[in-house]
Amino acid sequence: MVRRLAWINPRLVGIFFLGIASGLPLALTGSALQAWYSTAGVSLVAIGFLALLGQPYVYKFLWAPLFDRYIPPFLGRRAGWILITQCALVGTIAIMACFEPSTHPILLASLAFAVAICSASQDIAIDAYRTDVLPADERGMGAAYTTGGYRVGMLISGAIAFILADHLGWDTTYRLMAGCMLLSISVTFFLKESEVVAVPSSLYQAVMEPLQEFFQREYALLLLLIIISYKLTDAFAMSLSTPFLLQGVHFSLTDVGLVNKTVGIGASILGIFVGGGVMTRLGLFPALFYFGILQGLSNLLFMLLAWAGKSFVLLFIAVFGENFFSGMGTAALVALLMSLCDKRHSAAQFALFSAFAAVGRVFVGPVSGLLVVAVGWAHFYLISSLMALPGLLLLWWLPLKGQLVTQSISEV
Image (cartoon, rainbow, N blue to C red; front, top):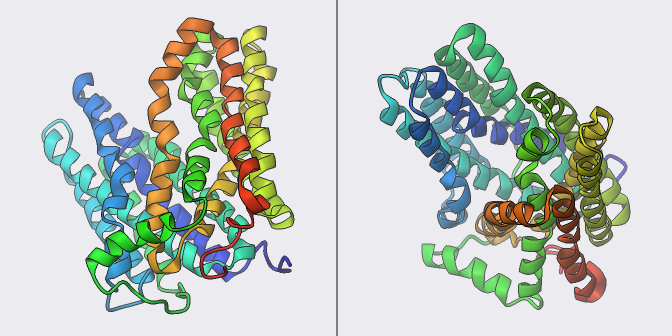
């Protein structure tokens, strides 16, 4: 039964602000840092290597067991680690502001790498906290609040940071971003931990038990395949979206930037919250299935744009539709990952599941380029739409029609 206050309560509000804190550091080691190096006259080759700074987000599952095994002496098992990582982020971001890429490019990049490690570690702690504290009937909205807050955080360190840097300079902008992270600490002090669960007695147990516990479940491999394949259709569609809009249908940089930064982000956030709300009514399994269908169908809007050519109306519809339905699917996928975690190992398991979920996004790029060359843009988006089928078929075959995945281990 859905709670009357499922749309808003102190838990969800706290999770929304944690989502902002989680998304804020991302651009500071990505697009914002690249722009800072570009305006400082650093070579394009050197700027290209900055992409490697994002590796900690991929490999964070390697040190996630530490967050299950060790409990800080303050605030609790999850909030304590959140506070530690946030303090580290404030310090490293503030120190970055003390150096210039023109005079200390390697040192600044090293500090950015430290920020990425701290940010990935904060994600581990926040994901574990959210997984532990939310009851089953709030996971849909919890996923929506998390992802919506994450997008707001990315907007602050992305678009807003660019505007600030244009008027105040990058050093002042990074100091302001450190100040924003400092504000997030105030939320952490009000977080309430979930009930106490058995903590792994050794680091070996913290590493091995999450794997053993999951793979001893019936249908574990099938669940992993669902996690990997569910967003494949989105990964294909978005892998070359910018080249398609610029080279395929010949929109200008201004057109693409304006639509993606306004319509795209707005539609994504709207889809995330609509998806979370619908999920509380439908349940997790039906939501995963129907949202998966909509994700695949939305790619056909780009196929229509490829056939029609340059059309601002179709551009708006395609970008809005793809981002809206992708947001709904993202909310359902995050809720699925939370439902699969054992509270004893939620840091390690969520980090591992999210790494599997990112497999498609990491590896489809080269395949997408080859497909476009071979079949053209319209047929490429038709194929990307069909890539929704593997995940949908796996969901259909999942025994008990999702009852296994709608309950966490503590509820089985």
